[in-house]
Image (cartoon, rainbow, N blue to C red; front, side, top):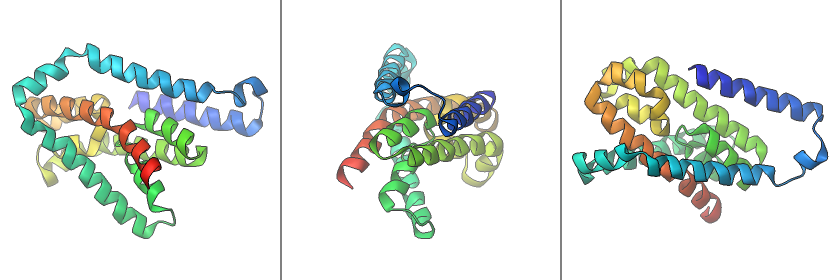
Length: 199
């Protein structure tokens, strides 16, 4: 939770800095945000490549474990469709925000680059809320939905939600959540790019 509060503080500081228009033009009118996105994608790829646990989990749990992240993506898309029915937003934008799957840093930067910064801000807040709700309500999700409830709610944010998942769901579901989170982390940039390309 501490990390989420720091991210929220930095986001608010960035909004305030932009609103006050105190940054020099070479920062505000440069390709810095694009390069930041590229660097983050490279860092995600390297992190997954270095993490041998991902390959060990995949080998031990067999291919059926892929059903879990696929169903999380499907459930998120269904939730986005329901939200779209009550929100005054284009379906593409609602689906793109939801496709962040709890990965607020990368999804907000990608959406800001592919659409606009206001939608990127919505993605940041929406996906941070997803993580915070999981941290706070993990035991309730277990009671209502079973052991896979908290990791489904966390989506790609299972790394920061892992202590809550272990405490409420147990060690085995924590192992599944690590693999699910890594799979969803890889899926986020592809999903968001596909939405803005084809919808």
